[in-house]
Length: 257
Image 1 (cartoon, rainbow, N blue to C red):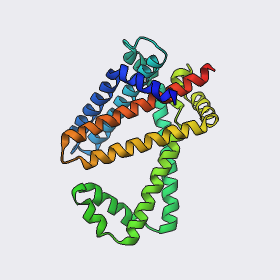
Image 2 (image 1 turned 45 degrees about the vertical axis):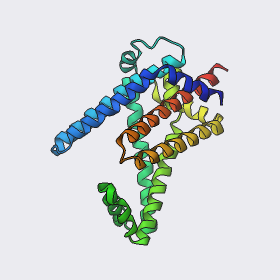
Image 3 (image 1 turned 90 degrees about the horizontal axis):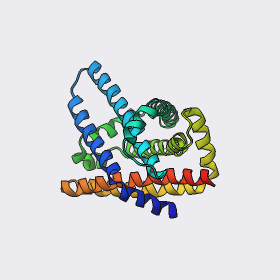
Image 4 (image 1 turned 90 degrees about the vertical axis):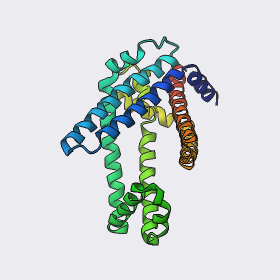
């Protein structure tokens, strides 16, 4: 996979992109921590503000990636990307969230029809997430039927998310490299491209998921050693950027043919 080698090369030569992603994640964590405990109105406004900040960051971040792939100077490209792509990226986020929510809700309704009430499943997940240290004992003492239903629930939820994510795989490259600010035309072009390059695309996604799963597992196991946890977290961001470069390279190379 020559494009993967190029993606690693782009990432290694543009470590400032990795630094920008890590910095944004750190600032996001601080912002979320500070926003905790607010009243409902303040929490709602905090969510809206964070969503707008995320949109602005992604608009500039993807413009940096485009500039690197096109061999352009990256100076000031982040700010230019925010100004040029903020509204299209905002629309993409909005549409993606609606489709993901509808697909997820539909899958949950099907599970509810099959299993009956999912109240015990949701309660088990909430208790396990609320106390990660006691997660093992909570799962070991759970009702076997509830545990089985929880596993199916999580598997279906992840599968729905993965399928929706896969459909949108080339939407961002189609927007940035296709020189079309119309997000619907970009989505249509990206879907056509996706299914013309189906096996290569699904191979890239599978490799990404495996690598991120391994890194997340290692990060979780290294929780007693914060330095190792931070290292695996940074590696996860690094792999994510390699993946983004790979998707942009695949789309650009095929357009050039």
